[in-house]
Length: 513
Ligand code: NAD
Image (cartoon, rainbow, N blue to C red; front, side, top):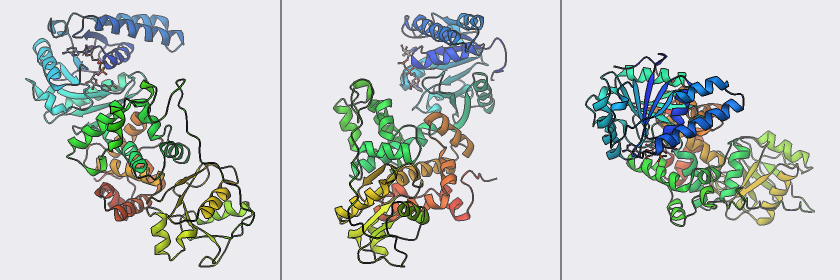
């Protein structure tokens, strides 16, 4: 049971000619497959065919495809009569059927029964579900060995990733064939086990939920969090920009589903804020207002805290030993500030500390430093692109402003936040690495697949394990342990995968033999 992904006459049936069905149809036809479309709505198949034809001809007009090849691809797509009303007899020649109908198990089971009754014993049946169990889908099948998950991303022609998911009874040859077909479609397959969110929607839980938590704790506003994550940490979009783009109706539902499906795993805990905003209709770009307003389709960014003037009489500056000590002193020296060299700061000094995983208050108190003169600077991503400063609740405003003015003097943007173990970027990135490490620990996917899926599926600059290795697994562990110690929240408990590799000094990509 299976199919040869390279055969020239490979025939693919697609049930559900909506957003996903038409995207899959387009890439399959371009790759030489014959595509048969079915839908409950008789207008949907022809509409999908028109849509695909339009997209393929546009590619030809841009020179991405020869005109004849484009017309040949269009001719390979057929809107059939098949569907719940007329049955699936038209799918008899299919080697593979992909179900991309509504996200409801009763609908999917009805599709499966109809398709199984029509196709040959060799035909593989795959579901494009994002959030339902593949094993649950297969439980309705006569031959569950031929059922698998084949999870594409929207828009299919641009998102070149597909998750290949085996249910409890799926035959390995089926997964091999789906993987080979993915390559033929120009997609990168990643294998994941049948667990909530599969790989990408599971690995993506940390970015948004940790950002929401930082916001909910009053540490920083959403626009500041986005600025730090894009400029300091190098993400293409900030977490709130992404929530606005995806739409809070979708993101909120995914946050809740994955959290509940994992029996309230604290690492995925959502925040009440998103439910409230969904109720208010603040869904994001699609409703013209989410976290940002979109007056002309473009986000309106709230202004940043202005850079205060440098005081006429600058205090001397003392920088505590630690991460980024020398780099910070070099930046300050260039401003003309008087740097202290003693083991302890003088009575007048502005005190700068650079903690990993500790807040400014704990750092000052544990080192016996005056918290009214202490300001923390985040060292994790260096100080070149954007600097994050953090105060204790008693830091004197004049001291805060002085640190801000000094560290902005060379034109580098500065974000000032309230006290938080791990600032902004440390918290979010450590949470991403930790969730990625635990996916590896649970053997949901291999380290390479996790990195690849996150880069391609979520567009992060690095995969979670690559991030951890680039920044240092020991540092990530220190950040999580600091957060865990301070908050007592099991959300921050380090994954055993991360902890062991950090203790051993081994790369996070190391899989056990
Ligand atoms: P859609 O609403 O755009 O399209 C679904 C199509 O299925 C519609 O044309 C509808 O008429 C048809 N349909 C509904 N019930 C049917 C039935 N009983 N028999 C035949 N056709 C039926 O939805 P979509 O966004 O394309 O999603 C389809 C599937 O893909 C869902 O399972 C969804 O979770 C999954 N998915 C969606 C995305 C996404 O971003 N939209 C991404 C990955 C996976």
